[in-house]
Length: 245
Image 1 (cartoon, rainbow, N blue to C red):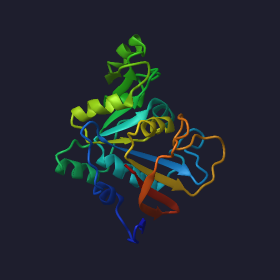
Image 2 (image 1 turned 30 degrees about the vertical axis):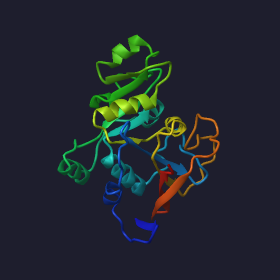
Image 3 (image 1 turned 60 degrees about the horizontal axis):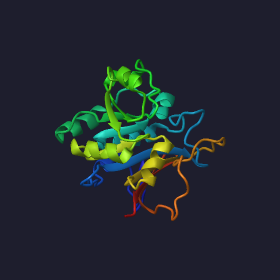
Image 4 (image 1 turned 90 degrees about the vertical axis):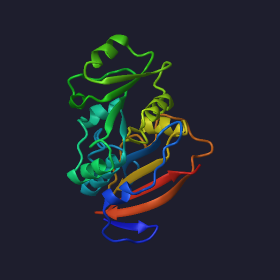
């Protein structure tokens, strides 16, 4: 994998590169990173799965970004589609985290307003956090409390800003979201996204897959982002953007 912007650097290590990027938590919330893969024509999934778009280099970047996170935030639809399990990281990344005085892997948090989650699903073997709204079904909450920590935000729908504030108070500095597009849409609309890492896969997918940001109206004006870095590997492009504040 080579870096081609802002300057050419041959044979870079994604774990070191992303691990050394500066990220500073805000006083009221963590630094929020989104990582997604899309086809050349903008599809974020093939047959309902984003993992079918990424190759080995995308997996390396995926793991590198998980390595910098204190918490991984993911929507319930993505958990079901991708059959999420507990977080696993390569030994070298785990060792780096331990040397920094951090837990070996980040905690996983699932966003679900309707709590349509199977308590027997793989993800619950790792005792994740489930973020839901005050209006969610209390019986479903009680059922999931046996396999997950439940975080309830006020109001009829999940308030991601409120949840991020709670996590910041716990000492969380970096949150990584792996989508889906509606979660990223909510974060952008609320001004909560700081960094966007996009893998562009060298395929044309067609179909009606959601765009990278979905479920929100057009931004007027559009949210400005600054291109910080581009990597290339096996035909994939790996772009790192920062939100212009």
